Length: 339
Image 1 (cartoon, helix red, strand yellow):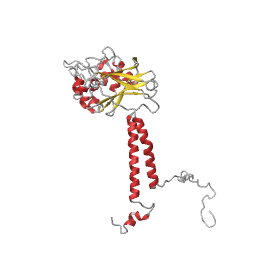
Image 2 (cartoon, helix red, strand yellow):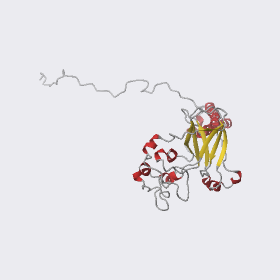
Image 3 (spheres, one colour):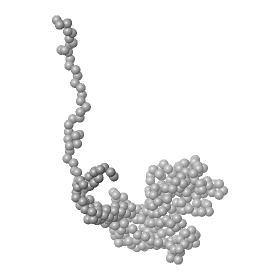
Image 4 (cartoon, helix red, strand yellow):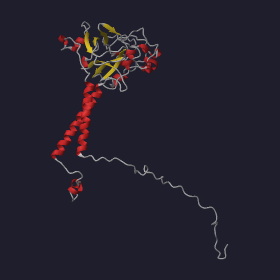
């Protein structure tokens, strides 16, 4: 107590702790003071950009599509009734075509069959299979979703059941150069995970394609499903109506301008639903194999950019305006504020 009667606290005690500031340390990055590019999109820059993209993309698209070609395997006298031709068991469905190798193709050369307008992604088609039956012999009778290809007319179980397996692709191809047969390697064309985990080594085909209406290829009843690689490739359904699947590989190199004779057994019926079939020979690189989609995309984008460039040029010539003219602002065009 001091003479004045005032009480004092321990002013000589410890000072209050300093509060931590939440203010970030100053840097040009956190304060967004870094140099920035702020392009001014003048009509000249916009037109030049679109024209440049169009000029670059269109030739790339044309080059990507240049190797495409079509051939017909139906005799001239049967062109008006393709369905009857493909469904007849008496017509000769073998045809030969000659292909010219456009450039050196180093092996392995991948052989694909391509189908168009075939909707493997249809809900009912995708569900028409039994994964349990495919994996294990003990689940042979699991055919809940397989109708109408679940059992034969006498009630016997079909293995593999369902519409996907029933519609297995059954065209065949053989190749020759200078009358010398080229071997086609059909081993390891399916995914290893599919062979090991989705198709059982103790499951064998049974009563397959034994009905009155044959949908596609038949299977060797003495070979387990885990080794039926054509079936395994086909059972991995495609997401789009146009797709290609691996048929096999040519392990030898093909020289430029070499003539390849292809013998086609035209069995698969795509004519009843206006589908198309193509045979594709392709090598692969880091960007993948040849695909018409890439060329079509380049052509589409390039043509669109050229169209926009021409449109901007015409618009600028017909209705020019000064860059940054404030008279075009809405509040200057209508001072009273009425719209």
